[in-house]
Length: 303
Image (cartoon, rainbow, N blue to C red; front, side, top):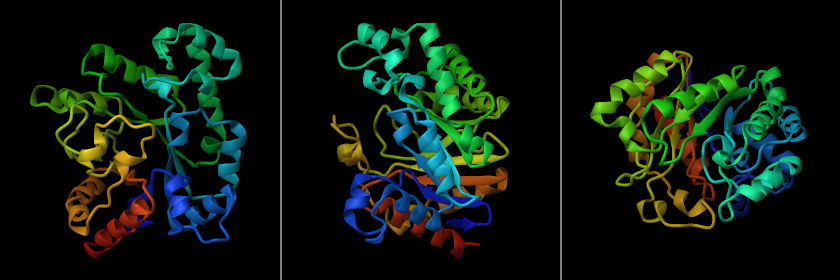
């Protein structure tokens, strides 16, 4: 779905359980994983794959994604949690790498710092290898690195972002920084200059405000080829509550007036970058789908 000539809009998942169960997007005959992806790809030109954050994809799964979508379709891949310094379940690791994780984990999670350099090198290598079918067919957009709240501005963090780029040097990465310190007045200029100097798209976000993880709705293109935008919803009541699953945090449906706030920002991004990719991450029932369509209508009205 295009909102204008170079603004592409999609959602952050086509497999969300509440979307499938709602019966509001997929027709009854789309009752398999293959049929649902084929249906989604008929309606939208891009998607962000959320499942790769929890479990690295297999090459077989990626091959299937390639074969079930049109040539011009784009997959953005969310980086595996172990690579973004998030807590990671040991059973998400390949069996031959899992023993070390089981031995080193703290509680039910493991972090990258608990694993040897050799194991982490192999995690990186396998993650990169799994994406080759997308890359070779021109269907890989960015590998999206969403860093945690405790990933603070400083030399160590900046060096790690560069390391991520170098580890995946054949691919494009985008970066979402989930601590507002990166965007405080004393840090903002340095943050933007750093990303620009390495040609890394900053992920602009719309999200609940008032939390440590809250980012301002800043729309800046730090790379000339692509600007990346994610809409997380504005569910302030659920955003910071401990949840067994992430879905309640994203149970928010934007009004057209709220979406309209972003029209001038997206137009400005479109003047700065070759393409703007907008992902609706308010994945609850058909909220993301409806808001993607609504935003596209608004953008078309302002062409």
